[in-house]
Image (cartoon, rainbow, N blue to C red; front, side, top):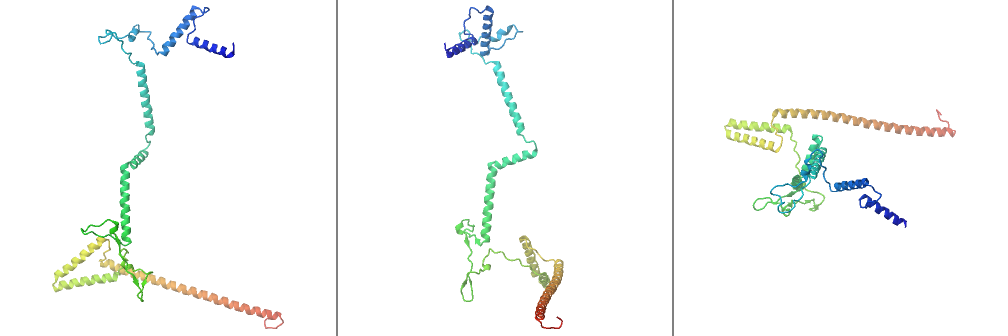
Length: 330
C-alpha cells in the first residue's frame, strides 16, 4: 500500500467520521452511538436554522403549527406556504437602522463647523450653477462690446445712420473719418505730418481761463444789463439773464466748472499774484545761484591754468640751473 493510498484512506475516514457517515463498529458502545446521534441532530438544526424553543413555556409547539381557520387550505389538501421568519425581519430592521445611523454620522462630519465655511460652500454652489455662469458670460460680452465701441470712437470711427434714422450695427456701415493731407510750400504732400484738427476723436485741450478776463466779462455783462434796464428795455435784459442761467445749467450738467462768483474770482486773482511773486523770487534765486556757480567754476579753471604755467616756468629754471646757468634766486 503506497503513501498516496494511505493518505486518501485517512481523508475518507475523517470525512465519514465528521459527517457521521460511518456505520457503527462493534467496538462502539451504546453511549457513544447516542453521542454521535446527538451531534448529528445538532448539526442539522444549525444548518437549517431551526429556532430554539422556550423551556419555560409548554405551548411552544403551537408557534410551529398551522392555523385552523376556515380560510386555510386544509380542506383542499393544499399546504400553506411557509411564512418569512421573524428573526430575519428583525435582522433586516437592525441592518436598516445601522445604515441610517452611519449616514447620519457621515452627514454630521460633512456639516460645516462654522458659519464662514457654510457661506463659502453656498457661494461655491452658486458659482457652479449654470444660471450664474450664463449671467457672467452675458455681462462679459456686453462689457467687451462697449469697450470695442469706445475704442473705435476714440480712433476716429463713426457709426452711420440708416434712412429710418436708426443707428446701424453692421461693421460694413462703420466708416473711418478721412484725414486731410498736409501740403508744404512747394504744393507737395508731407507724409510725416498729420493734421490732428481733422480728427474728431482727438480730445480737445482744456482751456485754462484767466480769472481776470472772466471777472471783466462778468462786470461787462452786468453793466450791459443795467444799461438796458435804465433805458427801459427790460425784456431784452430778462432774455440775456435767462440765456446766462440756461448756459450755467447745461455747463453744470456736462460737468464743467461755472465761475460766476466775484469773490472767488478775486481770491483766485490774489492767489495768482502771490504765486507769481513766489515763482519770480525762486527764479531770481536760481539765476543768482547759477551765475555764482559759473563764476566759481571759471575762477577755479583760471587758477588751475595759472598754476600750470607757473609750474612749467619753475621746471625750466630748475633745468637751466642744473646745466650751470646762474639765475637769481636759484
